[in-house]
Length: 120
Image (cartoon, rainbow, N blue to C red):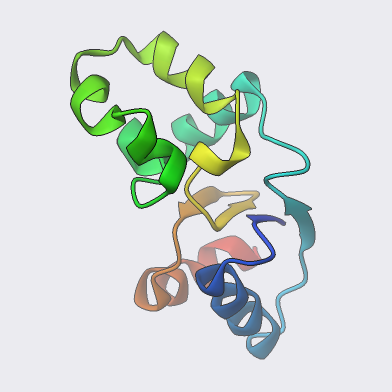
């Protein structure tokens, strides 16, 4: 499994602690140092079953400074993927990529429900 995080993010730290508590091994990737590519984002989006907006860090400073709350609703999906691939700070984290799915953001109950699916 791959965990996409930002080291200073408290939610990422909680997700890491949760994974350790549950004995789940993972590879770690700093989203700021190694931003996801457009191809990766497309793949993860397809595997997640989530709306693309969930992949945006809507509480981030960059998101707010770019006025994306107003721009995203009318922005074509291809442009949204391209934009996400430009800067890791636009990407919601943590993202957990497993063999059978992708989880975006840390919600303990959601991750608990997915644990058995991801472990296989």
